[in-house]
Image 1 (cartoon, rainbow, N blue to C red):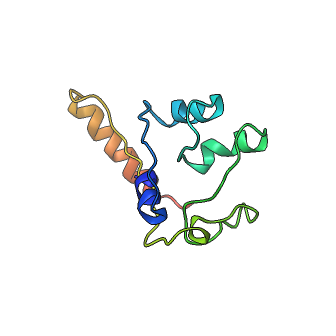
Image 2: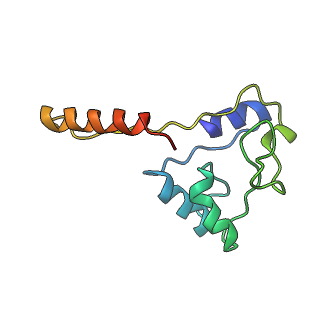
Length: 115
């Protein structure tokens, strides 16, 4: 989705290359299989620090305070909204009910804890 929002905002035509996950996509950028990628900062940062990749921009309207030297995408293209990260917790369809109930209980408990 980040790539599609970038395409719309920048008015460019880039080809989506489907990978089976963020790690293989990042490996594809490092190996030179693709020219650019859209990935989480957490997964890219170690490779940026080692010099394997260059972070071209953060996909926000403003610069990220933790990387003030990296421009925001909003500095290059019109950004109507920032792409949101989405994370899900999932398991097999046949997950036993007691296991699902315990997971639910522990997740709710964790979310109520103070950081």
